[in-house]
Image 1: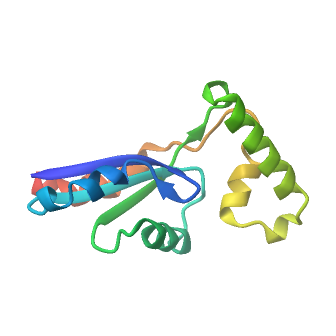
Image 2: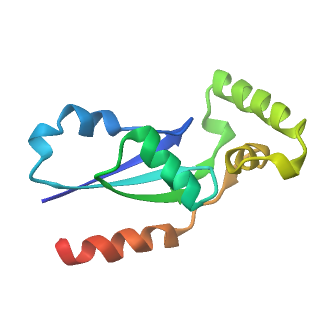
Length: 129
């Protein structure tokens, strides 16, 4: 059988991986996939960083951009994003990382959602389902 974990990316950590780590032994006979959703623009370097930070060397991983909905964030998260945005905007735009670019774009509600992000997942797992 197959397990697909879909988790949001917060500070380069994929939400929900605790489940896979906690039950790794009992999941050894399962096909595991992770679909991470974050604000940072896709790049091979960023995906490599996510794999390394989250210990996903042996698990199929996919990535898609999500959204930032300021209306649903806590007061603390809104303040944190505002602080980060101000810090990023002090730097020259040419020096922004992909994550900093996403933070700078996050004024108000922003959506980068595109159903095409799911195409590689569907293509890869369809034969095994």
